[in-house]
Structures are given as structure tokens and as C-alpha cells.
Image 1 (cartoon, rainbow, N blue to C red):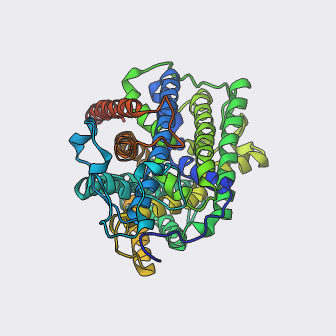
Image 2 (tube, rainbow, N blue to C red):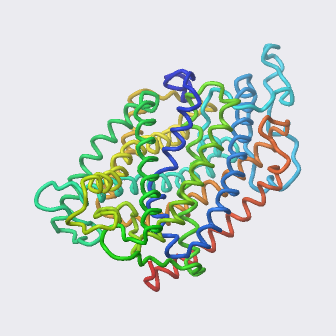
Image 3 (cartoon, rainbow, N blue to C red):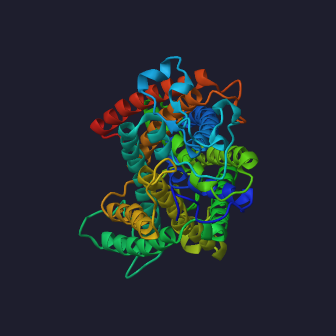
Length: 495
């Protein structure tokens, strides 16, 4: 596989492929909990959270692009014989001389390898720089290991959630033997429903592990198809919700629509905000998702911002509209469509209502199988970069890569057999998302600007070092407040 972690394929895919890869990482388990979060905190808190998260995520996208572009400069210097010295945390707030950290090659080096760092323009190249590799390069191995543990826990939260989405949705609508069931209503460890849940998890593990080991470059058609189907499912949720609201009918029974969500319950903002954030979080997946796209210098910003804007608008509509159509919002919103009848008696509902119900309930389960490999491969890329980075000397063999991918794909499914409450998983993943995106991404952007102060192709006046520091302060404050609130929720039994 060559030195470092070279790409498995050529960078020849169109930007739309990277766009759908990014969409697949966003349109995951988070959106299923959004209406529940909006119904708990109130629609006004939901709108406020969505607005803050969009601005926050946009700033982080710029910082990711700035970091990746400057990493290409550092790699170019390293390839020419320079030694890259990591920064100490206390040096981030001080004015430093980049030449103290970019040690040129010996005087007897060939002239063709000598170059001044300021002569290199920061732009994203065709190499993949994973975040674990970035943190280790910029801050040293100890901080890099800490970051690896954090990102490992975050990805495991996502993977556990995806396995939960698949199995809990499948047993709700697909009978294995006897009747279907709801794992949230029949959760006994030795119960019949738990056994069915495990059977679907075993099937899920077989499929997703195979796709993870196969690799991302060979899945373009599958990923685009699955993402398109998922988007159709969520649009169907919106359309049927609008119909229930304007026709004053229930989704799954006769009678008037009795949904009446709160306008504001500030008490639950600590639950709503991390779920909204998690639903649009994709920043750590950017290197993996765009790695095979050609002309990344030009297409990377378009891919990231277009996907973020579309998903943010779609999720805002889902979180805002569905609670006005559903009286008792499930923690997984697709389960509210199990008995969808468009206001008719469920026992007399038309065939098309059965089709819509089955499509909405099962679609997230099927799509979880396409999201899972992307996340598992992304986690694998980060883990392998710790030991086989562009800045190291150890090569990565195919056997080692397969081992890493198995470690990233199998254990989360096993854990999902025990822990399956999607609301807790989503809130936990939201906190980890803030740690990874809101703390380490701004720190990396600041550090790369210290080492490579050259004006880059993705630098803007409104997203400079001061903005990165502001993002960092906001993230620390948000994590602290959310942790306190979640502890209160758990102690009082409010979630």
C-alpha cells in the first residue's frame, strides 16, 4: 500500500459522489431523534438551536478546509526533508517563529529539495490527512492519543446508534417468527423481542462488516442510491405531516389532530442542542468522504457547504413540523408511522397507506447499512493514521487494514445488543461531537496558522484566528453546560 496511507483508488470521482458521501454521514441516526428533541424543548428552542448549529458548523467547515490546506504544505516540506516539530499548548497563545518548528534539511541536501515554506500556497491536495494524524503532527503523540480516544468513543456512539436504528426498526415491521415487537416497550433481556433484535443485529453485522472491509471507493453507486432513498423517506414524512396538520387528522387513526407542542421549555435545551448538533455533524468525515474526488481544491468547499445547507434546512423542517402532526413523538420518529392511515381507521386503511408506512419504518433500517461502512471506514482511517501516517515511516499492509476495519465495525454491533436507547446515544454522541469539532478543529486551525502563516485559498476575513478562538470558547462553555444539564436530567429521571 506504500508509505503512509495512500489512497486505494485514483482521485477521479465527480464532486457529486463526495457530496452524497457527506450527505450519508449527516442523514443518519440524529434526524430520527430531532422531532422528539423539538417536542421536549419546544419549537422555538429547536429553531434557535438549528440556527446556532448552522453558523457554528459553517465556521468549523472553513477551519477544516484551512487546516487540510496547510497540512498539504507541511507534508510538502516533510517530503523535502524538513522536520516538523509539534507545538506545545501554551505556545498557541504566543507569537512564534515558524522557522523554530520547521527544521530544514542538512546543508548537504540536494538543492532541488530546498524551498522556503512561505513560497508554498496552502491548498487541499490529493492526499488524505485524517484528524488523528493532524493532531499528532501539530501537538505531539500524547495529545494525539487523547484525541484518538475521544474520536474513537464518538464514532462508536454513531456506529452503535446505526445498529440500533436498523434492528429496532426491523423488528417493528418485519416478523421473524410470531408477531413483530417494539424493543422500547418489551425490553426484557431474556424476552422474545430481545432475541429477535439480536437476530437482526447479526444480519446487520454480516452485511456492514463486508462493506467496511470492501472499502469506500467501490461503493459509490450504492451510497448514492441509498442516500436518495433516505431523502425521499424524510420528504414523505414531511408531506404526510403537512397533510395531517392542514386536514386536522391523525396520522394513524380517525379523529382530530391533537398534537400541541410546547413553544419553549428552556429546561431541555441541554438535550435539544446536542441532538441538533449531532444531526448535522460531519466535519471529521470530510477527509474520508472527499478523498477520491477530483479537483478537490475547487470542489471541497462546494461539497461541504451545499450538503450542510440542504441537510440543515431539511432537518429544521422535520424537527419543526412533525411535532405539530404527532401527539406522542417517539424517540425514533419513523416508528410513529407504523400504523399510518392518513386519518382513516387503521384496520381499513388503503394499500398506499400500508406502502408509505412500510417505506418510512423500514427505510432508515436499510439505509443504516450504507451509513455504517462510511463511519467505520472513517474511524479506521483515523486509527491507522496514528501508526501509519504520511509523517511516519511504517507501512500499512492489506492484512493490517482488514484487521483495523474489523475492529471498527464488529464491536459496536455487539454493544448495540445491550445498549439501544437512541436518545441517550444521540445525546452522548452530541457531546463527543462538540469535543471533536468544537475544540480540536479550532485548535488545529490555530496551530496550522502558527506553522504556516501564508495566506491560503480558504482564508476569509470573518474566519480568522480570533474566530477560531471564539469557536473554541463557545464549545467549552457548551460542553460544560450540557454535561451539567444531562446529569440533572438523569438524576431527576427526566429523560
